[in-house]
Amino acid sequence: MLDSNDRERLDALYDRMRAANEVSLGYPAAKDFDYADLDRFFRFPVNNIGDPFADGTYRVETREFEREVVQFFADLFRAPRDDWWGYVTNGGTEGNLYGLYLARELLPNGMVYYSEQTHYSVAKNLHFLGMRHITIRSLPSGEIDYEDLRETLKIHRDVPPIIFANVGTTMTEARDDVRRIVAMMDDLAIRQRYVHSDAALSGGYAGFLHPRPSYDFEDGADSVAVSGHKFLGAPVPCGVVVARKQNVARIARAIDYIGNLDTTISGSRNGITPLMLWYRLEELGIEGIRARLAHSLELAEYLVARLQSASIDAWRNPNAITVVFPRASEALRAKWQLATAGPISHVIVLPNVTREQIDAFADDMIAEVQERKQLAQH
Ligand SMILES: *Cc1c(COP(=O)(O)O)cnc(C)c1O
Image 1 (spheres, helix red, strand yellow):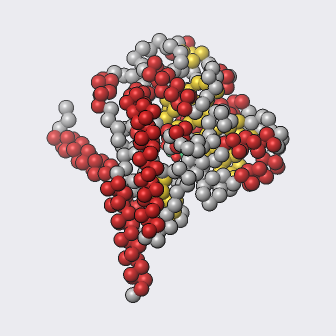
Image 2: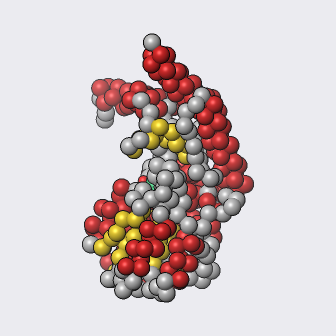
Image 3: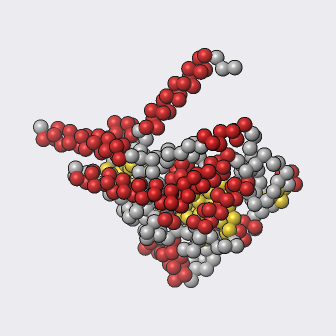
């Protein structure tokens, strides 16, 4: 039994989290979800251990639902009809690790290329995997510098490239053009290669954008990773990775102990997050996802316009829901939990963000800038 002190601490934690949740604009976590229907599943020791497409001995699991979630993303990422496989991960980081792991098994001598705007977790993943890598310059937008990539690929033509493409960089939501990179490798007669797309945030909606960003299997990717808690929203981190099935078959090992295949990174796997993602996709449907995307794009444009009208140098990449502006003050960063890197900060206009919140934030930012101007005049 918890004593009254424990209960008070939980209440205080709850109040603190609720208040913080109201004023968080800087990190990519949608908050407009309600999974109360799934509460009863917390009474089971759910575990999707092993491969989601194979039956195991342990039956307190949700693999059937997990398969439907993976199928949804395989379709969205235009994976080849009979040659895809995937699973619900603990987040974008694990999906990226998986893509790189497959790449290493296929091309053990490969060289990984990624831009300097790549998520901080990728260098660590490469360290785990012991893979050689080269950092490519980024353009001011955050997109990979194609000229630098081309020159570097040319120098290392004898080593199979493993392209780690950013489909929505962490700071500016810039999207590397996978088709363009693949064409570049064709042009250089580089046939042995692997392309992984890190679509942690944008993967939830890139397939619905016009024009459609070039990032998926039809564009030339061999695997795509997306986070579930970012655009769709979940109370715990989660994600999905989709890869070509024939590539996965090369690493699968049958494990007697679980009566299943060991194709994933973790042994025990979350069985609740697949259920959440399934619930979310069913509840929203394609139309619901499109509507949330339209809302985000419109409000992002509105925020750019408001800040620009006060002479703040705000901008966003084409069809991005991330609004970038010069490094915000300590006070604003703390209040709105803004992510900052060097000279820039950003707001991510997720579907739960309201016009009122955007106005309140813009008012704060504009007031500060005007105050600073007045101080400078005196
Ligand atoms: C968030 C993010 C990741 C990491 O995803 P997690 O779900 O937090 O593990 C990787 N890459 C990019 C571009 C991201 O934005």
